[in-house]
Length: 226
Ligand code: ATP
Image 1 (tube, rainbow, N blue to C red):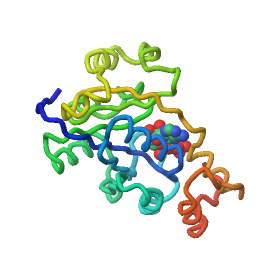
Image 2 (image 1 turned 180 degrees about the horizontal axis):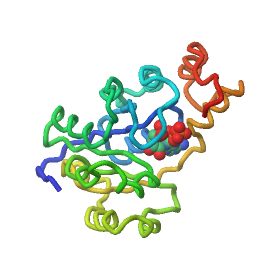
Image 3 (image 1 turned 45 degrees about the vertical axis):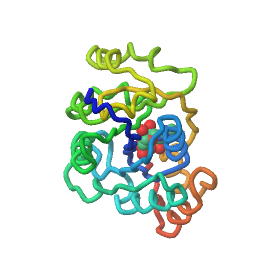
């Protein structure tokens, strides 16, 4: 771990396709902001994600929807640095850029769900991530990472055992820890929202009104391609 012996409130990094952003994302971010004592969360919509099929709508639309969704929360910020990249966006490159922008002393926390964490070994240069940021993992209450970590690769298990820390430890180091937070997961998914729009069904209360209006105004997700 990189230690600077100073306590600086961490910045959370929340990447996703946000195709579209919804209350599942926003509640996860809000809970992490509070529980990990973050001073800011940067929402980083991915441009060309290496891990999954291309998003349905352009990065510009996905960014615009994130911007509309977070206007009421001053601690949330849209960071659209991946949007205009035409090459695949690897998290490790984005973190390197953020580290260069924000300085060595600033604690950074990469936010993700337990499912994503257990697949971390498939990410490009994944072991470098620990040099650049802490990882904060949200898990469903009652399903701790400790119980499922045996399904991960031996290398990932080793990092997990070595780096486990509490949310209170995150501000004392700039990177290298793995903290777990119990966060209820809302049963909302972007896939379901896209399907509903294509089927002319209601999406009210699954995402902010401003985002629902944007989807309707721009005729997004009209075609059945979830
Ligand atoms: P899709 O349905 O298209 O796969 P998604 O809703 O899962 O999309 P992503 O943009 O891929 O959204 O997710 C970004 C991050 O948000 C991921 O880390 C994912 O685990 C998390 N996330 C997505 N939905 C929820 C939810 N309902 N509650 C908590 N976290 C969520």
